[in-house]
Amino acid sequence: MSTTLTDRDLLAWLAGALEPGRALDVQEEVSAFPEVRARVALLTQRLQEDQIRPVWRIPPPGVAGGRRGFTLERAALAVMGEEVIRPGDRFTVRIGAVPDAEDRRLVVLYRRGADWDVVFPSREDEDVQLDVIPAEPSGERVLELVAQEDLGEQRWAVALPLADPVDWSLAPEARWQSLVERIATGEVPVTSVRIQVQ
Image (cartoon, rainbow, N blue to C red; front, side, top):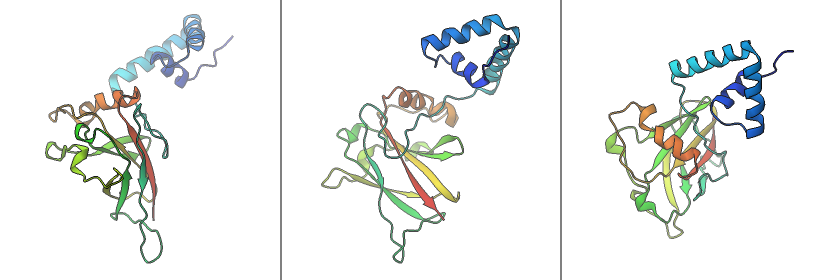
């Protein structure tokens, strides 16, 4: 008899991300097969050595994430009657009304490959609260962003964590670790938007 467990199954089991019944099935297979135990040991070692960071859990465009979600929409951009965005062009997004804007930090993320990077703030003097962007009568705030060099679809996200202190002496991965965790638990509202860059 052989196992059908994939590395993905084993990683989910190691992370405690499986339903209890499925976790029990995986545990039984790990116990029963020495080759599976060897794969688990190898995966555990790789996780420790590579320090694979937790995955940003950013919802797809149009879905508000977090317990107190907000809307995020790309505003229309008309250039000679056409909506065209090129690398380096500025474009705007509208952040829906957020009642406690004075208590929320503005964090902008950009998706690079399979992961997300914080592109703003990138240094301490950029660290601002959402209320620095003036609110319109509707409560919306207009944020201007600059399209990256990647052609095709670009994904952007805005997260609004509480304005707790950030340790700017840490490397970016460590600096934003608590934000990754708080987004995953729904504590931090986050919403994404996509643009097409030609």
